[in-house]
Length: 205
Ligand SMILES: Cc1cc2nc3c(=O)[nH]c(=O)nc-3n(C[C@H](O)[C@H](O)[C@H](O)COP(=O)(O)O)c2cc1C
Picture 1 (tube, rainbow, N blue to C red):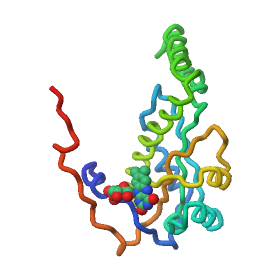
Picture 2 (cartoon, rainbow, N blue to C red):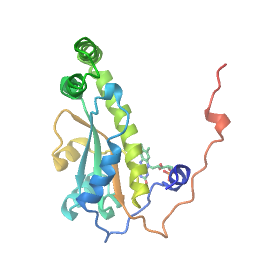
Picture 3 (cartoon, rainbow, N blue to C red):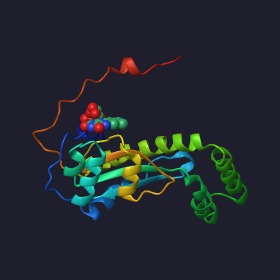
């Protein structure tokens, strides 16, 4: 699909057709595109937790103050950031060193810079979890739409209960919930008012 058309067609679904299933391979295809998202130092600390069973989705609905679409979605996904993700830097940069893209010195400098930035700053790690996860999630929603699926970004309510339902480890910080499925056609809300560009863009010089 042409990009402008895709951007315009992506809408937040009000509700989903409850009888539509999504297969793991269909989700894999979307995640293959999500892999290309930008992240700070390319640390790729964003993780996706996916449930598709009726039992689990019912628990998620209960924990989400009854938001019905979490149940009718084909899959309900929690997007998380790994607060300890920066520790993977040596492994993630190893390949570039082996290929000679980074020499030993540049490799060591990069790992040191990452450790200096994050090791003593939990607040920055949590903030970057949100930055990275949101960029990843936007790409997820666009990739999903490109393949004919609808989504809706949502807050994660009742974080401790949601973490239990999804078996999310302590260091993975829930950032967004995204149900995905096929939108109920007669329930598409009109596009909400959008500010004109001049109201949100500030040309400074
Ligand atoms: C952080 C966040 C939380 C949201 N929470 C909800 C929600 O709980 N329920 C819902 O129906 N939509 C939710 N939305 C979707 C917005 O309402 C929607 O993006 C906005 O109205 C613009 O509509 P559009 O996405 O169709 O262009 C949320 C969006 C964001 C970014």
